[in-house]
Length: 346
Image 1 (tube, rainbow, N blue to C red):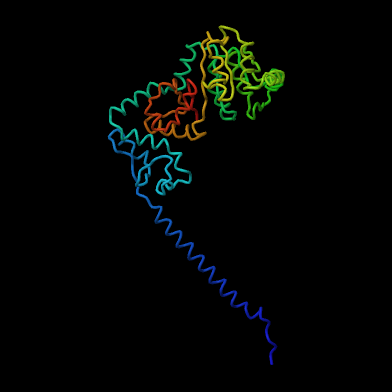
Image 2: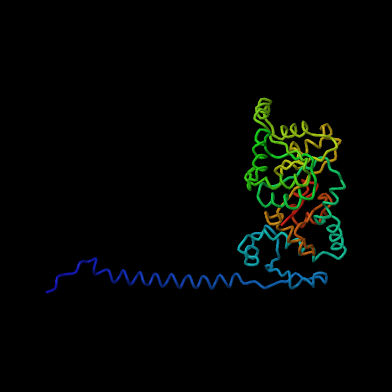
């Protein structure tokens, strides 16, 4: 007589059978769900060639629009899966703006085309204008990143002469920056990005260039806090005013916000009627990467769609952009108008 098997051993085949069925059922469910989702996500191709003006671009620009049409910000199922992109649909504001351009009456399209042709210029043309304009203080707003500094060093400061250059560092820290640059240090970090190539390029263009520290010092910070606080731009303005020489070309390389038209930021303070620089010719510009953010990516795509092909675009006077363009971009392009000029580079 064989001894009785333990109960656990008797249940093992049952457990294995159930587990096998569960795994098979799970695999079947995944396959069915995958097939069903593909059916749901299937969309027809729609080419935005509904005007003769765009017919020649049919092979270059084809867009997939949901049956309900494309409206940035909509949370419709068909919009969310727009183009089966692996990114949210709101990055396609440029496509939406281009579509609005295509379906507009010809008189409107002609107006927009004329407006863009008058407002968007190449870098060479703009630098020629800047040279002739004889700007006494140029506020350059940038994002403290390597590609921004590389562009400014290679394509701006090598071609535009500056007599006095203010950097976003204190006068106490500046000597170390200058010494490291002069001895050939390949990477001199200022706000987490190299500044040495900009200094070398500016000095090559003008050997008599004077580099100055525009940032707020510890002493200025203490006095500002004793007065009750406020933005440090007041201290930066003091440093610029104290080192300003009428008739010379000055440029300040600062974070983009310092160069906006907004009240209490640096450029707006310098541009006030009671400012010591009020009688000087001034200009504020923003340098933006064409691929950095939603606005620049979308606007660059729109420009390419309407026929602009360039590595660098300059919106020479942002105030002249047609109101319809702002409407097509849902007001996002009004961020450009925080500056007189915007340089979009690749």
